[in-house]
Length: 313
Ligand code: NCD
Image 1 (cartoon, protein in one colour):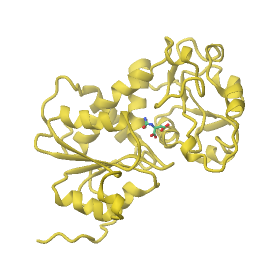
Image 2: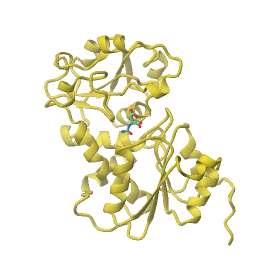
Image 3: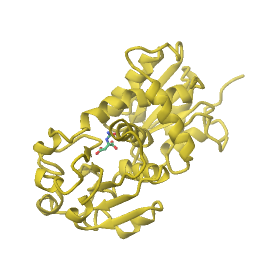
Image 4: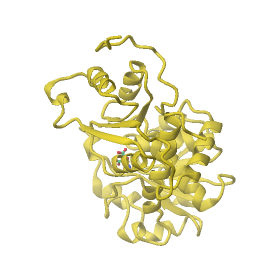
């Protein structure tokens, strides 16, 4: 049958799609984490042999893109990277037409990063293959939340009794949004900390179990997990936040970190901006697990891809 360029929206993303954490159940999250713990990029069976994984990136990426690609290749899949710059997107092709084109060349799954919230959901409703959200605007970044949860589990053994603190630009952060959904679903209460421009009062309604404070000292006391966020200059359009004020009040320094539990871990999705949201002393210090997060991105994304293509055992 001829494939139409504008297939009717099915209204239902294909099974195995990962569009966000908000509508996932805790048991599915825990199942994916369990699967990721069994994944080893250096010793894996070619579960996805002959499967075609297309990486469609409309925004800059280092960690997410490379780890999805290495995850797919570790499982024996064929990968194809399409960047918006240099593709027909620059000639004005619509998102749905690009999706249809990639399906026609044989994509079995599409991993997409897009500056607009909801773009992965839109494309998923028009395609019969799973779609994985690798970050959509200021909305969600589910694979990042999962790899962060995997990192917490590896360092803390279980989620039981933990408390997490997220400091920084929560408002513009898809990482924070997905992390809030995930952590509260698995029973970890979360404190959000930052100035009102970054942590508006309404942020506490995102998920049950969220608390807001403007004082970083208060936010840190007794916490087990400190998740820092980058100040997203590219999304700050028109907002007057004085970087020096932010640094003075919220930058993670070794002195501030002492307020957290002695065995607290420091996380950051990257890219980190040294001297802004954290000092080099903290970034490279003994409590930093920032490189572990990057490392865990590969097995986590192997699990996500295996599940997407029905190969999760
Ligand atoms: C983040 C992103 O792109 O959402 N990075 C990442 O995927 N690891 C966070 C950021 O850009 O600050």
